[in-house]
Image (tube, rainbow, N blue to C red; front, side):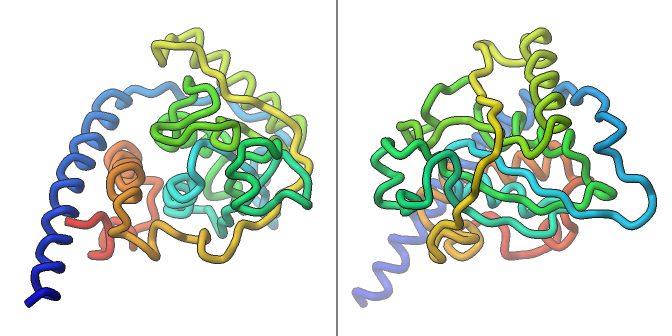
Length: 241
């Protein structure tokens, strides 16, 4: 009896939180239906139609569970890892990074195919779905420099496109406050502990995931269904409820 009660109670909690989260997702998607496109990519970044070389990108925008959960659903993204960037190897551990004193930001490293998805498209998803780029050193309930908004660029082309896009978004007054996203050179990426990898998909009913991260996925599906890998759109293992 106790086991049955616990299951019913858990179901009720998840249902309530899911309802709130779905509402957040709908609001986000409605507000960003006309989100500006990024500037044209430099020729050096465009796929040349021959043998495609996979590229890497590193983004930080709050808790890395949700950042990974969104990016890994995109067509052309071959792999994703949660981890730490901005600090040293000696401090690249979750408990230490969580103090906010290491210089690290919780980050996600992407390997993507530029013949399928462009860096500009990744930027658009980053700014419109993944995080709020106007929140300085926090995202939602998470506060500290480890949750800051950062683009770690791999080359001058990534740097120039990211900076140009931020200028475009600010000029268009896309957000009610200025964008505070940092655009800084990539130095190193350190994988997070194994239990942090693909945390959203491995723990879909975790309360934090249900309330804060599934709404991002729902917004992604509503705003950019053409970008989402089909199996995620048709799978039953999506947002709880």
